Image 1 (tube, rainbow, N blue to C red):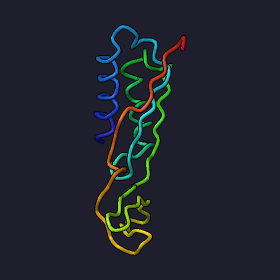
Image 2 (image 1 turned 135 degrees about the horizontal axis):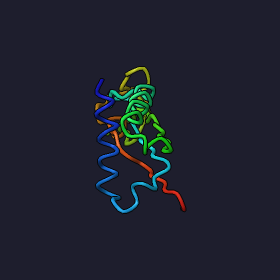
Image 3 (image 1 turned 180 degrees about the vertical axis):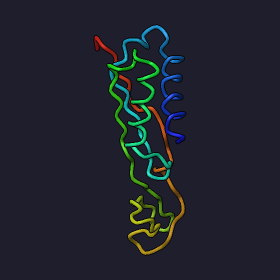
Image 4 (image 1 turned 90 degrees about the horizontal axis):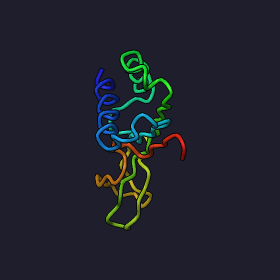
Length: 114
């Protein structure tokens, strides 16, 4: 289950980025594109397992937001949402130019006292 390493990496990154206030983190929001192969429920389960190893994280809320796949059509210069893995623009032409949906990133961190 690669979700455990993902969750560990998220918190290692936060500890490196905010060493002076890491212990004050109360909420972490992660954005995961549909093409990132991340399942929110598995991320939550991995986080629960990490809490067993790191009880100091038990007061932290982890929220995973799934982002839809958005592609860009060069023919009509419009962005469109990919549904059912059909990369077909509303103009009817196919496009493989993905502009959202592959990311996995920390999008928000909240600290106590904010």
